[in-house]
Length: 391
Image 1 (cartoon, helix red, strand yellow):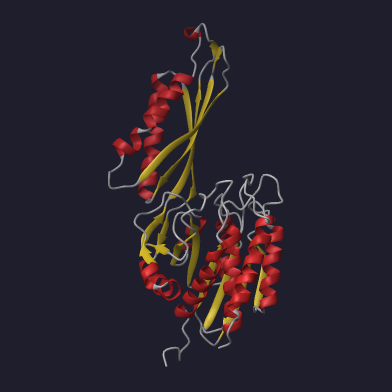
Image 2: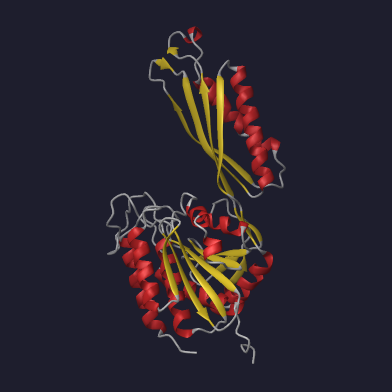
């Protein structure tokens, strides 16, 4: 098995990451990023590189040996509509858009893994390198699946990772079962009759009804769900058509709900509709509820979690590998792939002093690049072990 110059690879990944960071692109707009990824994969000598999968997605295929099993490794490519406030020399050159979640690092790590595996081999079977668009708004995985990902590039299992601010670089965490939540969005529209602020009795304004609805929604988690179920219902916007001396005739309540089981999501929606109608009726208003499911829960396959821990032990050292203490109420588009094949999603440290994700001062920690690349390569070699690997 050939050996890669690790120092050179680290320098290359750092340069790739800085270039991607300086040129962020929003979901389904990742044309430059996708072209960059595809060019690198072809440079590494992959067997096949397919662009425009699900819009701007890229899938690279690498085969070694005669094994008939395939695994997928996934990275997300999109940036956020956030104006960067950092001072790095490679800061975003696109006003109002930045890599505030580390997808530039995820892409660079998977490219590094592709180069490692192309140069060194050490596995028997097929690896699919899946570079996904539009993770941030939960549409990219579905777009790739709708474009025939599983039929065109079949694989038996899938792995993904995310950096974690607050977790030291060199640390690794994951857990079996629920690890990230569903995200449901809702909009409740109340309709009444607006009027003069001095004569509320002459109309049927909606602001008081909206405020009562917001308060009543807080009882869903506290009084309608089992304490054993983790869930969050958050109202994030209250918008009316009123002004300083005019009572509104229209009010919109927007927000999101997080949960880890489909039954809990269904219960939240049912209770929300009941509360919205009951409150509207009490105030003499009409009401409409629009409830959508943007992200599904991310449920790690227990057997593949064990495999991920085994691979992480080699790369990070067993003393740096831990079971995540609790599920996260953040959401992740990777979950969509798990409706088709088993998989495992993991977290690697971005540093104790890292700014939070989706923060204008956030930056991916380059010291984590080689660890992510090596983890991708190690899980590939363990899951696609050559027949004589143990001899």
